[in-house]
Length: 118
Image (cartoon, rainbow, N blue to C red; front, side):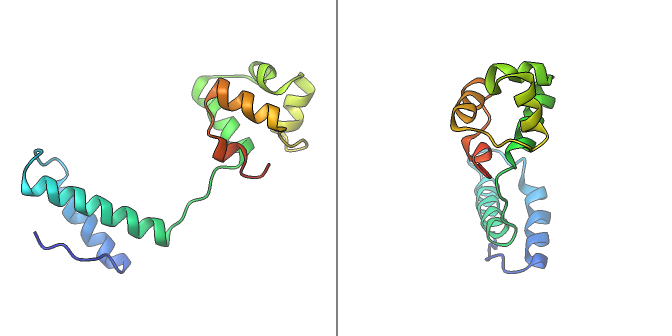
């Protein structure tokens, strides 16, 4: 095992290439240890060089709607009247803290996403 820091995109590609070879390693083997180390190094490099931000609240809601096959009518329980749901989905009204809590509790949308632009 020859592990070194990932300092460039070339190093990242090489780490991914090696990870492909050891990814299915049996637990307790040196290859499995190498796989865990590579995953940690790759995640650290990507977190530093390709940061991600939370989803936009409306995008998060629409994504959950798509996942669960929900319609705007289904959101009335969490947001309010059909007009209010329409305003939120069309970005004409911001989510209130009460809406955010209900969406989180009822649809399990992360607070981080719902509060991103609230």
